[in-house]
Amino acid sequence: MVHEREKILNVAVKRAKTTVLISLFIFSICVSISDYLAAESILSQEAQEAEHILNASISEIIPPKDTPGLTSRKREIETLSNFSPSVLRLPKLKGKAARAEALALSDPRFLEYTMDGSKDLRLSEVFGVYPVNATDIPPQFAQIAPNDSFSVELYNFALNLTSMALVDTLHSKVLDIRHLPQTQPNIPPHLKDLAIQIAIHAPEVAEALGFSPTKDSALMASTKTSLNHTRCERSRHLCVAPTFVVGKKALWVIVDLTELTIAGIRWTNVGATGPSIFTERKVQDDTITEK
Image 1 (tube, rainbow, N blue to C red):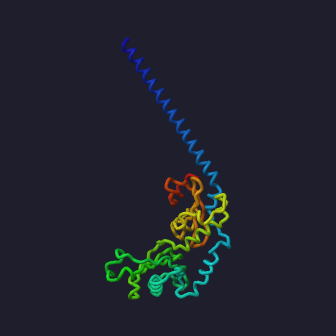
Image 2: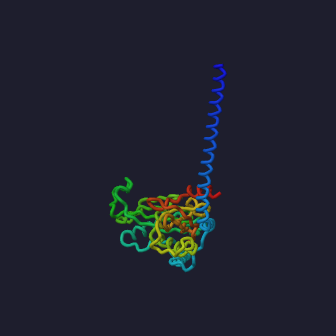
Image 3: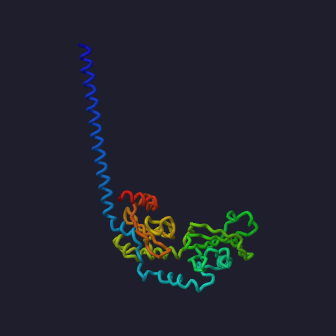
């Protein structure tokens, strides 16, 4: 009799455990479905809000012809062959800085990649002329004075290449030349301003924002970036990102300074310290979510 009671009790316990496990399993499924539906609802809402913006990311946006600074920029490029050397200079340079630029541009080594094998021009522009700190002077050139030494940076748009020259203005010598493939220097102020003008005068940007932006409302205009499925991808082109903050969102306008177009526009959320950083990995994650 005792054994029979133990058997009955064991069966009852097993049934109770099974019931509890099944209940927990069903509960977890319900919670998972609830979380999934909530997440999907949020994603769907955000996708609907940004649908017309995402479409703009696929094809380039041509800025209006009357965009300030755009006509003069194109004219400079078209008439580049009239100058010797055929390189866009950095405007408003004076004194030693202007002399350093002139010395660098007179050195054939510095201009090595500004033409291809058939002597066709590759668009190149001086992006910066900077005084060199004593700590940045290579040991073999320790004898030069920091006040007379400059670094000249030349960007090659065609090759996405930066050439750097170390110049001693006191002795009128170019001491060192370096060519850095797939490297982009900091953009000069006039190109930052051009990127902002292209962004604020594009009708697509005003439509996305719901108002016509101004130059003062653009942030991060000198931040180099790229956008998936465009020529900016993997830094083949020089692209920067004027950004416009509206509430808790930021509209990134990816301006292609190589083609003088807008490669695309994209909304991101604004974090506690400002707009979230826009990276290629983030675009890939967004693409996966969209599909």
